Figure 1 (cartoon, one colour):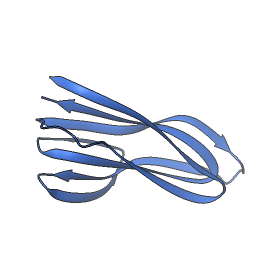
Figure 2 (figure 1 turned 135 degrees about the horizontal axis):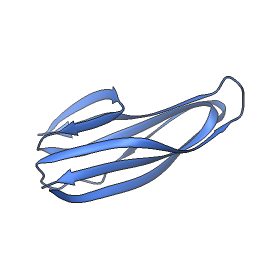
Figure 3 (figure 1 turned 90 degrees about the vertical axis):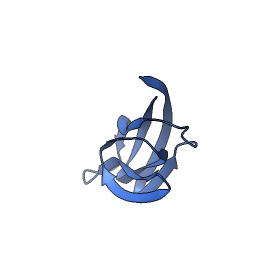
Figure 4 (figure 1 turned 180 degrees about the vertical axis):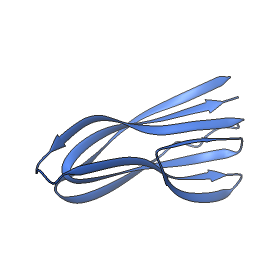
Length: 103
């Protein structure tokens, strides 16, 4: 059963160069599973050769950090933190970082 969720907005501005950003969840309470992903909300190109990428960059499960580069994560119990990232090149983008916590 869904216990709670977080909806965090973040932006990456690479309108004149490549730029990366990361954002972490607040500490995640005891759970039986987590589902998390990013979704693109706004996009602006400053050049024809532009691109953006939003992704899950890592998570901590049962005290062990994991580094990944995936579009979404659905995993079992013991997740205490998730990190999302985004990259922009000749573009500006706003993402939503959504984390569902199941109990």
